Length: 244
Image 1 (cartoon, rainbow, N blue to C red):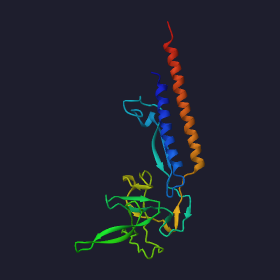
Image 2 (image 1 turned 45 degrees about the vertical axis):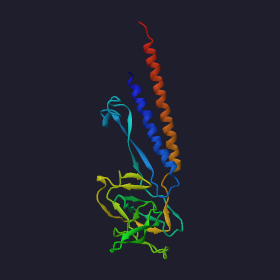
Image 3 (image 1 turned 60 degrees about the vertical axis):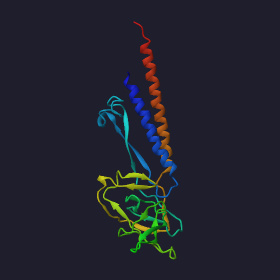
Image 4 (image 1 turned 90 degrees about the vertical axis):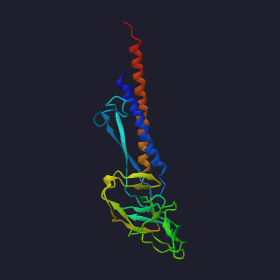
């Protein structure tokens, strides 16, 4: 079959994937702490010898979206006036600990609240403590890596919220709800250089004008790929209709 069929098919498929990334960015334009993603493409001719999906496409077929890298740049803060809202001025992340799984995740979204946590009192019973949390079952870590106990009578007081960072943030895995977990190439956890600002939340870094432009580009590229398939089909039809 004409090789252009496969090139156009991969092109349409990957432009749809690209459109999904930009559409998700637009959907989160007003979500505090959200970090936009940037599609990264690579030529299948050189980097994917077996094609887009092994045994389904011939090698060297078009281009493939290899990843959607996260843009961790900051664009500004919103003054909420809420005592348990925090933002990071500079580099770094808030650390969140999930007591149900023991997982640590990292976020720039500092819209915190306080949640109950039951502790053993040493006498066979439990005591109730209030700790700073994300409101979804995870607790915020302090500068020393401990839970941050909140006094319900002193909610306006600034809490010792920790800022943590990695040598390399590229490729951190997005696990949803504006949270990320490190992968091997991110290196060891370290104390972040950013400064915690109370009563502020970091705004989404989505550039709406840029995202809408990329959506139009994706739609046009998708249309061109479909046109290429149609043209290839017409060529095949003409060839098949030839009589000697």
